[in-house]
Length: 119
Image (cartoon, rainbow, N blue to C red; front, side):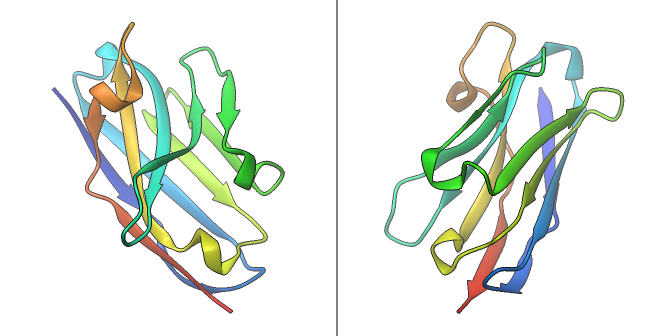
């Protein structure tokens, strides 16, 4: 079992920056890829960015060039640096970790952290 705890959400003005962190504990040796999803009210939960255990990254088109995902395997932590934030980035952001060989959505989830971008 992998336990994920997010931090770093909050309220920021448009154009500002936030950095989300997600610390993993438990059976960390079973972790494969890690990533961030977000869900706005009445919307589905969508992938924002992901990073494999080898460091390969993937981003949603809407955040490319503005968000950066990184992973510190020594600290069992994944980060999401969010720059040039827009009101449409407002959502609950969830950290996810896949099991080795599995998909992110079938792995472990954090409790979510609210990001609100004011115009």
